[in-house]
Length: 326
Image (cartoon, rainbow, N blue to C red):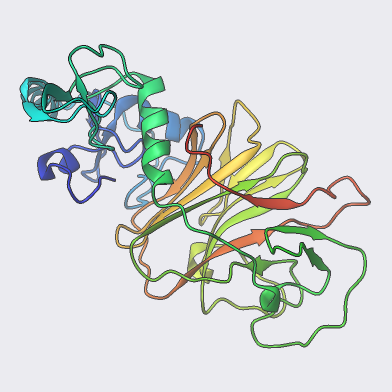
């Protein structure tokens, strides 16, 4: 995803998995394009072989070949961007109108030629992993919203903090009004504010927990009885079970192989693009993305701290302020 000020050509050359301009682009049999390493990693972490965009399933894993035509287009575009220079104010030293090179296609930052290595390599398109991880995270963080928990939706066994930023499961079922908004069987709670357009982002600390569910839910989801967390049922979620078993609850669910256990999870939504992405904030790594979804009503941040499991899962889920210096 790019900001509205981004070059339209650049947007057309973005991989929907890493949100960066294609590197060694490959094409699926259904006609969608991705970075070779991104698609390979996506399939390695999935139980089946599907297109991340349209979800078409392939009986056999396609033999990925570089799309040389698209690669040539990308290379030409990179060359053009690298050559572009403008008289702008340096984002580091703020000195006058200095000859600078646009560094980051996501944040649109510019730097003097006297600053050879700012937070990214100075070039039209940065390709190294450290660069795009930090850049993508910072780009998403600009859409951070202030999320608080809605007690009217909270299951009666959930305990919310006074500031409505933390939720954990208790052992006692409190006597609360059974209003239509309240979950009565699954220990779920929603955020107070819903979003029906644009982009939004929030971060949740999951440190110390052995199981949890996080994501977004549409306004009309079932609140009563047993609930299935799938996009068809109005939920876009990633879950943890048994301390280290992570799944994206697509249909069917996707088992996720994470090299590092996330301590804080960032959730990003682009309503118009039909995108819900999950990131390991501290490791600056992508966890999973639901792509090419169709949203037609308000989406609410969704939380399930899961049962406390006799104290083994007693830590709360904590909505944390975004650290822009991360």
